[in-house]
Length: 417
Image 1 (cartoon, one colour):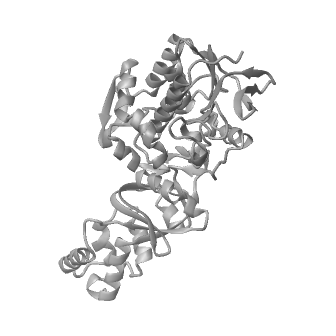
Image 2 (tube, helix red, strand yellow):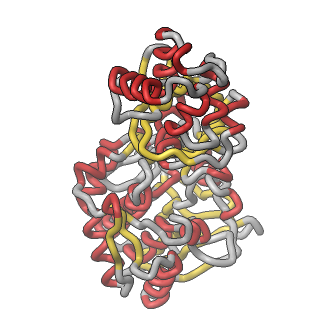
Image 3 (tube, helix red, strand yellow):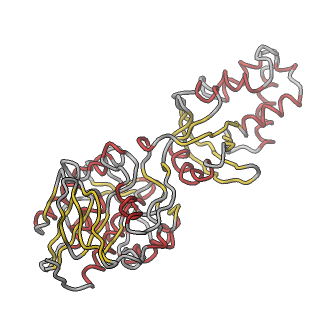
């Protein structure tokens, strides 16, 4: 009977156990926590956006790192396959804005229970509260594992599904990177991703709690634009967060390692400079004898007004009929280019995922097997593969797990007992 060890009881690990469980397979799953799916439980604020109901081309377009590596895996296990798979396990699903797929119950626990129940029905052997310390590699092949208590266990194949470094309190402590390095597999530099951003200016922190909707956020390195998108964002005590910022973090994270970046918010993206100037002129014309601060107050949320007045360079008490054209045009430019400086990423404890990891150049994309170590597989977040929010990262977990399972199945029976 072919014996397979899976290290990690998160999304990809449990999926690999379910996909691999066959009558001629003896599957063991090792999880150092006291329960499975601790990170999966908090995914999507506890609702678990488990995939995105889109085609493979769109899946690839939403990958940030190494999309080509995922081409074969998504071909074998698409987002529709993921939805059908969980429906087959009894999880009713629903599709929301942006084609995000959730359990109909809005409970991530339903996804976890479905996987755990299927592992149980397939006689997968569980090893909870069990930490794997190292791999046993002999003659260029994975032969088993060494537990933290020193026990050695032997198998025909080992799947590493340890996750990354994000949310370390769920058990994601980078063990898989160490396993890879010790096996002679390259690991790229890692950083938090899908994470809030730290800003330099005090006026940004003064806006703590302010949410902006329907704005455009652009981030530049010198003259080069790294990111630009439309949506909503939030000011915090350390900088900025919200959907626009979270997505931007995955694009600019590596660039930040070379120094701060400039960010700009277009507070009125629906209006051109000329249209915005015309609107302000109209406000001035209708309120000739009013103070500048009172006339422009209708343009901004109350919390933003003092900062705009501070940065605008126009005396707030000036009557609008005394505001010079040059001053007015500078204020228009401020509205269209509200500038601040991004200095860093928030820590892994606040990051949805980890960017970087096991170098995909050392992994066969058609099997998830290490190219230089036979019978050793890497799946899920431990790989240097990541995507935007919207269910895409969990789709990576399911698809890579399926790839490894298919490879194991194609390998036939082995005996290593």
